[in-house]
Length: 140
Image 1: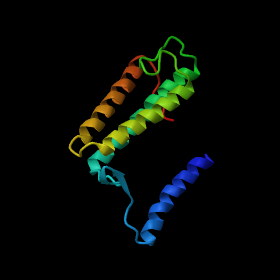
Image 2: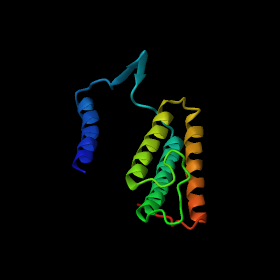
Image 3: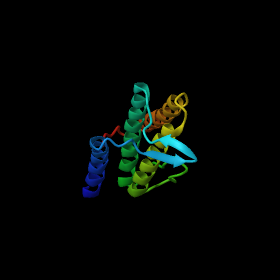
C-alpha cells in the first residue's frame, strides 16, 4: 500500500514540478518524437472507465469463485485455465486492463472507440454469462 501511495504521489508531483519550472512536456523517442500525453475525447474516457469497471466486476466474480474452491464452476478463459487461484486472477486482471488501455493509447484516435467498445462488450457479455450461471454480481 505504501509503495502504491508513493507511486501515485510521484505521478502527481512530477507534472506539477515540471510546470513550476516551465519545462516542456517529456517526450518518448521511438524512431520519431511521440508526445507522452495522449489526447482522448470524453467519449473515449467514458468507454475506458466503463471497461475498467466491468473488468473489476468480472474479476470480483471470478475471485469469489476461486475463494470458494470453484464448487461446480470452472473458468472458461483459456489463458487462466479451469481453476485459477486468486493471485492468478489478480495478475490477469492487471495485465488485461493495462494491455487494453495501453493499446487504446497508441492506436489512431479513430480506432480507439472501437477497441474500447469491443473490450467493454467482452466484459459485459462475461458478466452477463456469470449472472446467468447464478454467480452473484460483486463489487470489490
